Structures are given as structure tokens and as C-alpha cells.
Image (tube, rainbow, N blue to C red):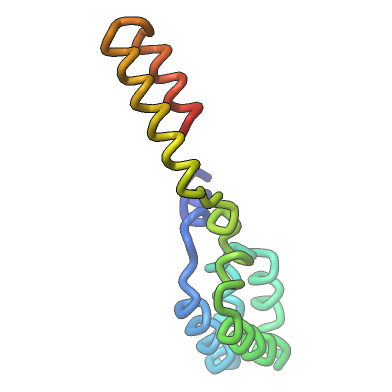
Length: 128
């Protein structure tokens, strides 16, 4: 379970997803590989549906549509298939300066013995 979570948390390659979808559309009739791109993108239910219908033309058409869709998407691809990348907050330069100043002040207090290592680490984690 931990391995699956680790694999799903990594950013997905748009080029690999396009390649897998095209391969699924081309080779779906002789081999049951339609939907492999869905498993790669962390959508196993859709992957199973594609595999169950592998002898029909439905998954071949769907794979081709998916490949074109991934090709069209640029910045939106990561937001759709790797939400953690889209939620990273951006910091303003003033915020970075303020955090840096606060960290320097905390370090000074720690070196002077006014706060303990535990308090320093706790405050540092809050700031970061």
C-alpha cells in the first residue's frame, strides 16, 4: 500500500501518458493493454473498464481521444493528474525576507541560550 501511494504521489510525465494512450489505441485489438495509461495516471477503475472492453472498438477510440486530450493539455495536465504540484504556494519576495529574518532571530536566540533546541525546532517548523 505504501509503494502504491509513493508511486501515485510522484509527478506524471505527460509524454509517457500520451505514448501509453497511443499504444493502447493501436495495440488494443490484438493485446489487452487498452487503459494502461489510466493505471499510470492513478485511475485504476477506468483502466479496468478499458480492459474489460478490450475486444470492442470502444477502448481503442477512447485511448486515441485520451492521447489527443493529453497532447492538447499543457499546464493543466499536472494540475489534473498531480494535484500536489498545483497546491504549492508561491511566496512573495517580502515574505521570503520576513521568514529569513525570523529564522536568523531564532538562531540568535538559540545561540544565546534564551530558547531551547526543542523550542527552536518547533518555531522553525512553524515558519517553514
